[in-house]
Amino acid sequence: MLEHSSPEVSAAAQNKRRQTFRLLSLLMAVGVALLVAGLIESFLRWDESRIRKSDAMDATLFRRDPELGWVLSPGASGNHRHHDFSASYTIGPLGFRHDPAIGQPPKQPFTAVLGDSFTFGLGVADNETFVHHLNNAFDQKHQFLNCGVPGYSTDQELLIAEREVIALKPERILLMVCLANDLIDNLRPVPMQVNQAKPWFELSSDVLVLKGVPIESGFATSALPGDLMVNVFGSDYVTGSMRNRLDWRFILFRKFASVVWPHPDLRPGLAAATLNSQTLFWALVERLREKATRIGSRLEICLLPGKTMVKAPHSPQGSYQVHLRDALLAEAKKRGIRAHHPSMNNHKAAPTPSESSLFFPNDGHFTPEGHRVVADELRLKL
Image 1 (cartoon, rainbow, N blue to C red):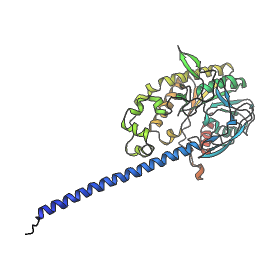
Image 2: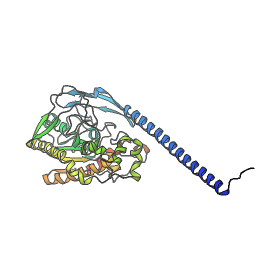
Image 3: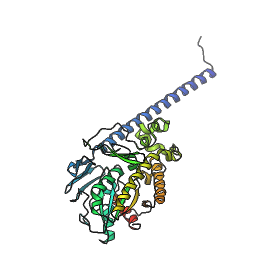
Image 4: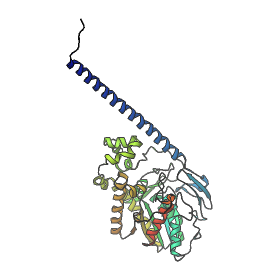
């Protein structure tokens, strides 16, 4: 005799099969999503490595220096190739970037512009730097000497001013401060983004003490972390939250997570976290101002925003730069030092796509358009 299952048992079995199918479908969808995410992450890592390896600059542009770490080679010329650009640089007889608008040494009166790669004009031609645009704007009535050296921080800029620039007797010294990394690099024997040993200063009873000289080797391997926020808040920053750990490990997460999972507000802790770097910075500035005053020159500072500050001011790196900008502007006012800050927010983008951005997308330095914007803002303030 045949047995027939009841409708209730059949319905239960079908429901169980449907649940199993849904679970398997969900697991398969999760697996596919993880596989796709893994493939995208692998591609992003490969692409990031490819772009990083594309950076190649002719070594003849620099020479080792036992006091400064490295300097530009007088009379040299060379090329710089990167995924974002291809540029040629010319170094004048004084060992500073050549500007076709003026000679070296410049005519009096002139302003010596101290700075790093943003001032030097990494990625742009000799006639595309903001210093060159300032020379054109002032039409020989006042000249500007580009004393920027790629990789320098405030300590090296002070040292090269004392050794080379002061003797030229500029009417004004304009110290360009890159908010993204200068104050951090002042604390380090090796810059965050350059594997070159450098001199640095420490404060002992409010007195600047030079360290690390003479520099025996131009190259150095540093165990110090190169991440900005780790340098600001310490190694605990990475392990402080799941958000930070994921940010540290995955490029894909960094690119898209901020839309749905914003970073916490870091501003309450930035005053304490940046106290040491600000204290050292102002000691360096005051020493430079004292040297300038001796020759009848005046010192002014200019705070240059990095790409993150302009594009993502509420990100951790952007918040850090905004905090520094506000703190340094307030302190400069107290000290009677004239300070400038190009906002780079009010500008008309060039109509051609290649010049529509202020910063190179991967390299992060000013594009030709970015240099024009900086010059336009400074022209009205200097």
